Every structure is written in C-alpha cells, then in structure tokens.
Length: 387
Ligand code: SF4
Image: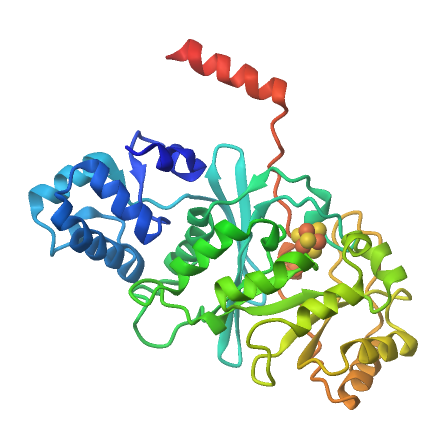
C-alpha cells in the first residue's frame, strides 16, 4: 500500500491487519484502490461506488455493496475493513444529550457529544485534537495536555459513529436528528487546519454524509492568522470563544489573548469571508460569577462588537471537578442578556445540556496522555521483540 496512507496514524492502526477505509477522502480512497490493483480505468468508478456505500449508506459489510461483483467484494474484504472505531463509553443524559468516548487508536481516545434538537436542529460537537495546547481557565479540556492532532478520518468517523448510534443511514433520507456539526469539542481546530479542512470536505460531500457548509461551525479561541484562511478553505460558519471584552480580563481567562489581542481578533472577524447579516459570527461568552458578568462588561462587549454582524451566545458556566469559577446567578445572566439584546444583538442564553454526564460546553476531557519518549521507545522495543 502507499506510504502516504501508512503515514496517517488512523490508517496504520488496524485491529486485524486490514486497512480501514471509513473516514478516507475521495483521493485517499482512489489511491488505496489503485495500490490494491484495481485497473486504472476502473478506479474512478469503483471509488465512487465505494465512497457512496460508505458515506451515504453507512455500510460496514462488503456484501451490502450489491453493484460490485461478488468475487471483487470478497477480495476487497481480505484487504480493507469498513469498521468503525470502538465506542469505549456512551452516556445518555437525562435531557437526551449523548456523549461518546471513542478509541481511535491505542491510547487515543476522544469525546464527541450529540445535542438533540432544540427547534429543528440537532448538533454533533466534534473534537479536532486529543487534549489542547491552550489553557483556557474555564475549560476542562485545557487541563489535558495535547496528545496529538486528530486526522481527517478520525474527525469524519466521529460523525459516522453518531449516525450509526442515531440510526440515520442513509444520509439522504427523511428528517435527520443530526443536522449540524460544530467543532467545539476537544482542541483548537485552527491549530489542525489541514486535517479539519479535509474532514469538512468529507462531511459535506453531496454523495456522502451530505451536510451543507452552513451547517458546519468552526469555533476558535482566536488563532488570528488562521481565521480568514479557515473561512476561505471551508466556507464554514465562524464562532469565536470570546468570554471577555477587554484585553486584561481576556488574557487572564484565555492566555492566547496575550499573543492575539482583541483588536487583531476583531479585525480578522471583520474580514471573515461571506460575513453578512445572514451569515453572522457567533461570539461565545461564558458567564463567570463576579468575573465578566457586570453591566460594565456588557457595555464593553457591545462596544467591541459594533459594526459586526454578530450573535452572542451566553453560556452559563458548566463546572467540572476542580474548576476555578462559579456560574453567574440567573438574574445576572438575564440582565446581561437584556443589555446585549437592547443593543441589537441576539443574545440567547444557552440551556446547559448534558451537565449530569460532563458533556456540556467546556467539560470534555479524555484520559489519553501523551506517551513519554522513554515509554514510547520501550513500547517500540517490545514490539520488535514480539515480531
Ligand atoms: S476552550 Fe478550546 S482552545 Fe480553550 S482550552 Fe478548551 S479546548 Fe482548548
């Protein structure tokens, strides 16, 4: 098989020696079939067929691919797998939110969360990294060191696992429960832009999972140099984890602000491709008691956003074990929302979802830890001894 495929950690980790195809993009799939020995003239047709079976019908059994000859299916099954990664744990909240802990590879576990419909939209919150390099003080993931970036396949597989669980194949049928994908799980997606872009291409492919690009939201803590590029590459909607409207406070809550202060962040937002009243930027604002929730803070926020088509999502803080903050009182949140609203910005207060299973915003964290170099070397030596 091509060396390129083996460079992809999601591809090299096979439980039974088979090469997993679910999660691959069109190009990688065609390459895999070429390397397998499919005649060059047939590669395009075969990869189109297989892509459609995998991503539109969600099949996990080669025998379901009825437009492919039986003997070819049998040969493909000896080399390739259509399996999903293992769901290590699934929890369902009393409000219907579902949290999945998925093992992508040995030691690589990620969480994704399905938040069922409010009105007609149900969103899957996907992770883009295992752990995170940023240490936003209100966020549980921020306490987990970065283990590694997820591959495009591992991101797309989170969507497929949820679609399995929701029993929503084929993707083109009827009313779906999962209508939106938000990159608000573990990690900073703009620090993994190449793989996130590829994953969005897979997720939005019309012959596959078929999500509209306006149904995808990229949420960033404010990686300024990547913001406009991310919009150009993905055409996704943008959300900014803002949480404070002055530099002093924001730097305290979100250290990334020291590198990319508010002036630069807001400039990048103004330049976001396609920005308009129908494509507003969502600013996420977590309500922290006595930190960022006063009338003065509301005024600062209004001044900061002036002239930007924006919506402000107010998020009651979701505590986690050892978290340093408390959630603002309900009346304080409501009066903050009223002030923002009066200035002409929609400012819904997000109903906390999945708090009882630590699936709410800012509560995700897996136990995956980066293997220390010495441990890694030991493992490699053991592997050599075992061969
Ligand atoms: S809010 Fe996002 S960027 Fe900040 S620590 Fe958490 S996962 Fe990382």
